[in-house]
Length: 457
Image (cartoon, rainbow, N blue to C red):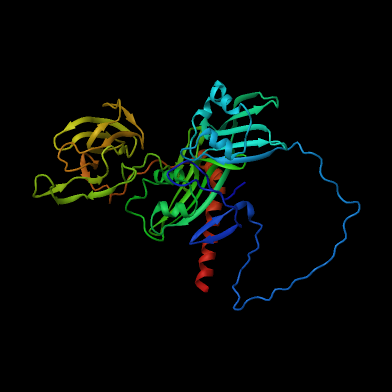
């Protein structure tokens, strides 16, 4: 089942909350769609009256039921309260907010080895307490690991302390597999990519996945334009109705400069899987436009005045300004052809790729641990860190893209792509991605209809 939603993965942003909305809502140019609610929803319009409304009152005497209902018997269902851990909180403060006054409980929590996970209180995590009708503790639960990947399965872990009702306590760790949902969202670039994903309540982890998946097609540092739009389908995990994390992107369409770029997850023959466009062409193995996640271009390919030696010289690559220590990633699968010092380039790595392609990464402060000549690397692997070794006036990455050992402009060249699915795999691929293609198209149709309504007003 497809549901619209967000996830609350810990990040520099505030914890994102899930919103339940009608099946088709547009807010500030952002479309939210919950495919499970296609039956429709009523819309209510509130109109401010021009004059104060007239208020009518009515009274009616009602007869009491006979026989009169009796009070409910004592319920065994406990009252559950919850509080979120704040920075600087102590265990005593948390128990006080939960109105837990069980004698000996705090001493038990501090001393019992099975309760050791409560020794670390992480801001943002939650603690719950269940009290009976007399205010006595039934159980205390610390959700210390709301979401974690374990043996390929997303799980929630918590500590539970129970009371025996006689002044004694027992502590035990629990874990449970999270529930998996599929989320769908759409947004428009108004100022930045992160601004658009924030507006659509898309988690940061999904945003970063999007830049990695389409990094060989779109330069997210300089290619984005106001009015660009994306539609995305991704996995979300929840436990007890609370969203605790996200999985992978299942399908994605990004419209950049009026051109659509697509990606869909597919694992042929039970392999580990990778991303393909909707025509079955693999995105893995194509060259990424940049080797850094986020930076800015400080010098382009071509003639320039040399910052160290002066005078006009040909610049054989593109410089990306970034803080020292910024991770550098391989832009494609390849083999380390050179790792070491080169005159002018400083600490340098050269990767040999398929056919006659190679890439060069210069001025590094240090290389990835253990990397040596002859090692195989995969696209996106860490190979080093930004520095200012060699002829450099400040920390940056000098990146070259070479064909037959001749440098060419990596920002303008049509980068090579990987193989295309065919035969039996192509048929299986079409069956698997048909549903995603349909939902992406539905989002586009709904957005077009909304734009038409706005234009007609």
